[in-house]
Image 1 (spheres, rainbow, N blue to C red):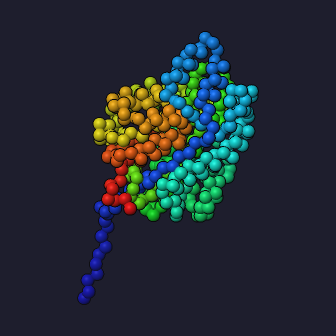
Image 2 (cartoon, rainbow, N blue to C red; image 1 turned 90 degrees about the horizontal axis):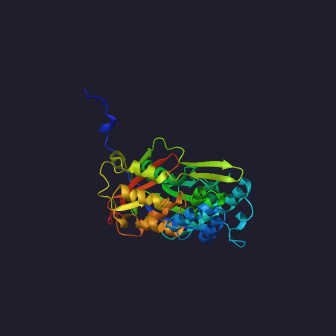
Image 3 (cartoon, rainbow, N blue to C red; image 1 turned 90 degrees about the vertical axis):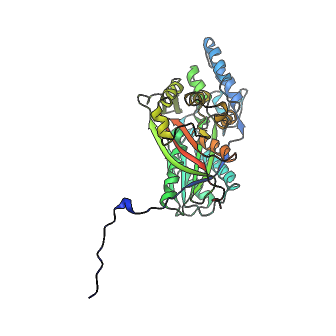
Amino acid sequence: MGHTPRSRVVPFDAIPVPRLNAYLRAVGTAVPPNEVHAAYLRWARARVEPRRAKLFERVARRSGIAHRWSVLPPAGEDGMGWYAARSPGTAERMAVYAREAPELALAAVADLAARADLSGITHLVVASCTGFVAPGVDQLVAARLGLSPSVERLLVGFMGCYAAVAALRTARHVVRSEPAARVLVICVELCSLHLQDTPDPEPLLGQMQFGDGAAAALVCGEPGGFELGAPFAATLPDSAELIRWTITDTGFDMHLSGEVPARVARALADPAFAAAATGGAGVAGVDGWAVHAGGRSILDAVENAFALPPAALAHSRAVLEANGNVSSATLMFVLARLLAGPPVEQGLALAFGPGLAAEGFAFRSAPRDAAR
């Protein structure tokens, strides 16, 4: 008589699962043609009451920013265009966002296309917190690029400066679940649309940090560039009021408290934070730092808390100097510089934003013999 084999239940955790890696193959960047930093400083100084002008000028000199860029063309004696004599309404600002955000995003994609093959895109992830339009920037860009209607789209909105982490983390999850996926990630921010006229030096100094910019990246399972490692996220307790956006009749009013750098420094000094950010490995072995250039004081806080050598955050400081803080796109600008440099054995990306929250991920250069 024949023998009928009996079925055996195999525990799920006993099933070998191949390791699926996701790679940040390349990053492209773009800024508008209009340099506005010097014009802004003149405009802001004229609004600060005289007794506080010296404070404004001292902080401005120490900002570490030399240039910022805007989609708004300079006009008028002070070079501040439509902000020279009035405060535009939110509808007018959003009309400019709807026109200019897709164009700047496409410029970043064009820069990316010069560095990577963008054929066969299956997913599109777009992050932006400086405007709203429907159809969204994701749909507008997909149509202009001629992407297939079957491309899966995701819009990451209003997360602020750490949205690049959320966008790249999402792309990593997609590729690890669908190894053949090719994900186009775009961050586009038009921060200059939300300037607020005030005599208070604190918001004027906060606004002084921000400029416009866009970045685009390709994430896929083909080895090359940076392998994206495990992400992490942490919300700092009792800090929700330190970074806020409020939608008003005259654009998005951002509150950026002067307490943010000190609060970040305290969080970074906690050994548990460093352990979570590095998977328990600690920061001593990190040889590639991609820290969001949120401002000189933020970078100083990271450098001091982790006792880093001055050169560790050189790429972040260079991005800040050349562009200011371009919100979610900033981290991608830093990663683009790192990709162009020496190989990274153990990298750490880190960004801060509303919440007050810190988010990031590990990364490392793909082995040379693994890249195709």
